[in-house]
Image (cartoon, rainbow, N blue to C red; front, side, top):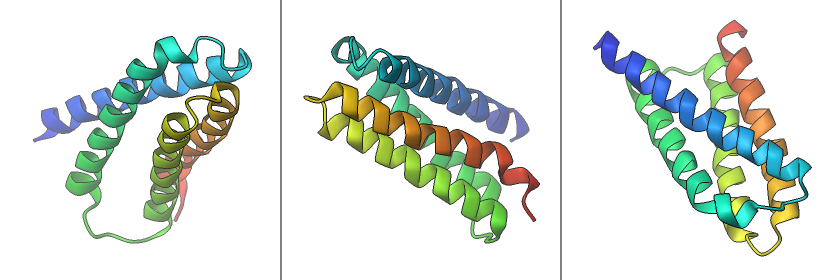
Length: 117
């Protein structure tokens, strides 16, 4: 079971890093190149979210507290970021900038979650 968790964490991190990193770069570039990366970004988003759901199910379950609240905020921001990227595809600069802010919140909330009590 532990090796499965390690593999799912690695998949979650790699997909998330690609998605957030490419979003940050596209936001700084004013959305130029967003169309060519749209498909790979959405694949990374789906993989990251599915891996996150698996990790939540296996590691957290029904637990509730500050850690889980922080992770929930991050997850909600990630889903919202994907929504903006998909819905505002015709306005890539705006979509990427909003998604970048939401994914920054996601990254911070997940990074600090384990330290909340």
